[in-house]
Amino acid sequence: MNSNTPVFSVIITSFNDGVFINEAIASVKNSTFTDFEIILVDDCSPDENTISILREIEVSGIKVIRKEKNAGVGDSRNKGVAAAKGKYILTLDADDRILPSYLAKAKAELVKGFSVVYCDVKRFGAKDDVRVVPAFSFPTLLAGNFIASCSAFTKSIWEKTGGYDVSMPNYEDWEFWICAAEAGGKFIQINEALFEYRAKATSKISKVIDPERRAKVVNYVCNKHIESYKIYAAEIVPYLHKVISSLENDIQNQAGLISGGDISGLINKLKFAEDELTRRTAFYENSFFWKLKKIADKLMGK
Image 1: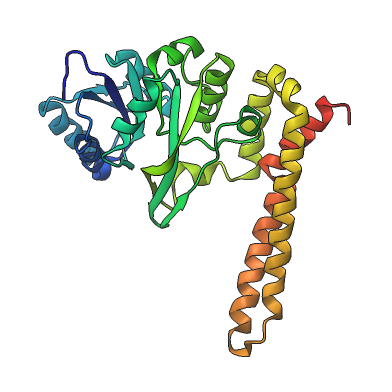
Image 2: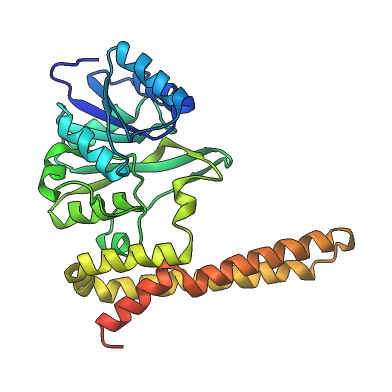
């Protein structure tokens, strides 16, 4: 690591993540590209184990910023980026990991003039799968986030946007990507899972699945970026209809589970189908996409 003039600054944000922090740091240190610094920002963790580990990390030479007040991950990232010496930034939650080649492959794109580099996501822990993300499309981004928070970007694009919106309790990364696009940032996808997201039952992502919470986030983002939504409404609405149609097909497929001929497994199929139908119907009727569709329809005078 080069602590004086690093090319990359990796901002690791933590809140009571003591049990995972060293794993996240180790994943960065294993990078094939070595010209980086690590800045760890702790969001005023009260957990004694986390506090103890932060002291050890600080003694090891890694810069640790300890906030005096809990103000959310957006604020933590802003403080980390503000203190960063690198031209390029990678944000990483303390319970996640990156693959050794991520920094090198991200840098190869950033030097070409791209402002944001993102990749597919490998989930581990409670789930084991890969989320393949699409190539960049601003209308699709306005419809919903598909770019992981652990993405690389230039410090200059962060400066142009004013940073993460600290008033947002969730999806602050989505709104930041929208700001980056509006500021003229160029996005590129690496079609490879270079980021490992730890899936947990109590993860932050699970909190925004709640329809009411998600609706508040969507309303806030739509109002803040209303001009962009007006411009791209004609592209957003068809996309949303496609998503809703897919959800309807899923509901029908789940209903078909109860018609199977395996008598011994019928009860289990019925319970699974009932649970899935309840969950997907609620998601369809109260979903992020449906509420955004209504907003887009309104903008188009429908």
